[in-house]
Image (cartoon, rainbow, N blue to C red):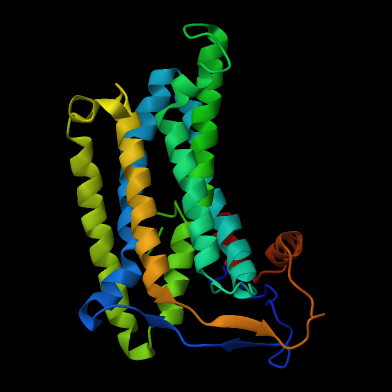
Length: 288
C-alpha cells in the first residue's frame, strides 16, 4: 500500500518479523465480503457530501475562486504524502489488533471530527468570536479550510478504486485490508464488492443531500450542511465499526525486539530522496 517502490519496509528481513494468527471474517459466508468492504460505503457517503457542499459553502463564506484552487490542493497533497507514510507505518505495526484496523479507526475518528467541524464552522467560530463580526467571518473561513485539509488527509489513511485522488488514508487501509484478508481467488470478488459499496454510498450521499434534513431532523441544526455532516460522520463510523468487529487480522511479531522501527520522519526523508532519484520518464509524469 505504499506509493514509492524504494521506501524502506518496516522489517529489515524475514528473520526479524513474521505474521502470526489467521486472517478471517466472522459471520455467514455470504456476508463476509460485504462486511469487509462496507466501510467504503461510509467513505463514499462522506465524499459525496464534501464534493457537493464544500465548494459552494466556501464561496458563500466569501473565499475567492483563486484561493479555492489552493484549498483543493489538499486532495493531491494527501495522496502524495499520506498514502506512502501510512502504508509503511501500517506494514510495520505490531498492534494486537492487526496492522490495518488501528490506522483505519484512527483515520475514521479524525475524519468524523473534521467533517463535523466543516458542518458547524460558524457555531464553533462563535465560541471564540462574536457572531456577525469580521473576526468571526475570518475564523469561520479558516476553520472550514482546516476541516477540508483534515478530511482529505485523514480519510487518505483513507480515492478508493475509481473516482478521484482525494480521501486516501482510511481508503488506503481499506484497500490493504481487502488484500490482506481475502485469498487470491477472492480478490476479484472483493474488488467488485468494493465498487458496489462505493456506488451505493454515492447514491445515498447525493440522495440525502436532496432531502430537507433540517425540517425532518431539527435537532441536527438549522443548516443543511450541518445535518449532512453529522449523518455522513455516523455512516463513516458505523460502517467501519462493523468491519473492525467482524474482520480479524494477522498480527506482526518482531523476532528481534531491538529491530529498527521506521518512523514518519524517516519515511518522509526517504520519499524526498527518492523523488530526486526517480527515472527521467517517471519524474516527468510526477511533474505533470
